[in-house]
Amino acid sequence: MAIRLADVLTHPTLAAADPVLRAAAAAATRTQLRWIHSSEVLDIAPLLGGGELLLTGGEALALASEERRISYIRELAERGVAALAIETGHALPSIPSPMVAAAEAAGLPLIELRRVVPFVGVMQAINSMLVSESVSQLQRADEASHAMAVELAHGGSLDRILSVLAGITHAEVTLTSISGATLASATSGQAESADGAVSGAATQERPRPIHIDVPVRGILSARLALQIAADGDANLARTAGNRSVDILALALLQRMSPGLKEVAAAALLRAIDSGSQAWRLQQLASTAGIPASAPLVAVVVRSAISQQVRASVEQLLSRRAQPSATYVDNAELLAVTVLPDDAPKAGRNELLARLRALPALAGTLTAVGPLAAGISEAPWALAEAKLTLELAGGPGQSQAEAGGTHTPVIDSETYALERFAVQSLDTEQRRNFVRRQLGALLDHDAKRHSQLLGTLATWLDSGCNTAQAARELHVERQSMHQRLQRIFELCGGDPRVTGRLAAFHLATRLARLP
Image (cartoon, rainbow, N blue to C red; front, side, top):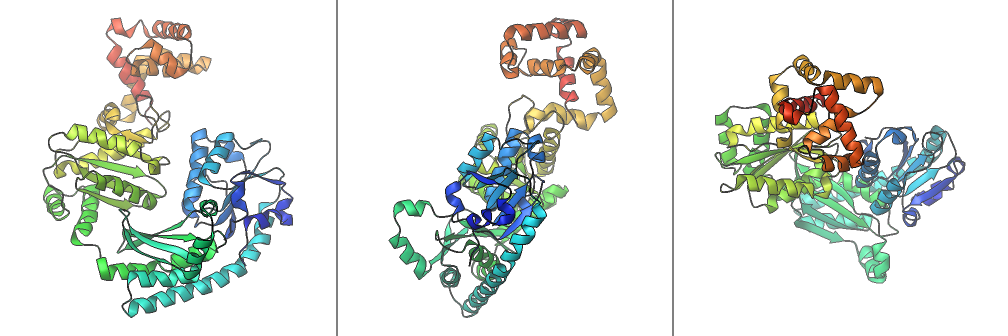
């Protein structure tokens, strides 16, 4: 019998924490648990398998930014975590409302634990209940995997193979390509009758589909989706789905194994990343369908869930009707895509805009490299995109472009000055230049705990537009004028009339480098 979240909340070990549902309360009655886990690490999502009740204290969240808290919620929901329980107290008196709103929007049950309880005791008591249920699920999942293997051995179609999985899990099962095209689907007889019996409102209350990646020879080739009924066993569906990946990979390999073009595309990205010689890049590019002399751009997506992000990025690139290639290397998704010969800069700007509008990149740090004249410049373009990510993640950057606009997708051209400085000057040379130009200002900030350097940087980045800088800093214009007056006194006058404008701007940009 499946163990549900609502049952666990009334268990004596957890009830002692005085739990209160703050978001997605309607989902709690049907949410099933696979395991209970505790962690204070905010980057825990990639280490979870889905179906967990995650217990966490408030210390790490209390120190995190609002954006990080929201991305934490989204990452857990995307990973399929069953629910999140946060202990409130001295460090975190209450759960921030943006987190509650994000959990409600994502359909992730969010629980406030208003009293302190030993998490170890909660996990020992409830996980022992879950273990016996897991054994039963594994046995049934293995039965499904064996039956699917038999169907494959007898030459069954993808639809017939999926029907075995659908029959055991009582779920609607769909296998799609990474571009979103349906390859096969199946529905169990029970699911069909249930669908006919439920109303439209009930259909909307069904749990989120369970998504499982299906790689073939290391290349992400398809995605399995299991949509269970509202009263179905999500843990069984998840376990059986994961057990079926190897069978589905074999079936895909027989019917539509990765072609030479896909294999060459992966090899091309690896060669670009390692800086292979131009002749080798041209050879691989030709096989991968990428014209060797065509203008192109490199993209690097840094995310703990790169495989999940990959499908969204590849769908976006395929819609541009330009040749492209992608490759996942640990926590990085690497991509190159060809730009229109007649308007490469416009094509690059369009790609930037589309990436910034892609919801899947909200929780990532992504960089679009500079324009490359052909495949021989791709290693340089990719290296510049990676350097941009390093600079953007440095102190004071906070995933913001040098111009101050917050975005998870960064244009490497906004970091052209920083990239040049890092490659041309060592750390000591950069620090000495900043000290020579802005030493008095740095000393003032250190003694008075002020932020005049940040004020100067914002003003210079705005093109010396005092009104715009005041808006960005959320200060009155008069206060902005007063700050600038003090800055000019410390730095030897208004840089617009002393000839030091470029030097000051360079120094403020270098001061933000790691």
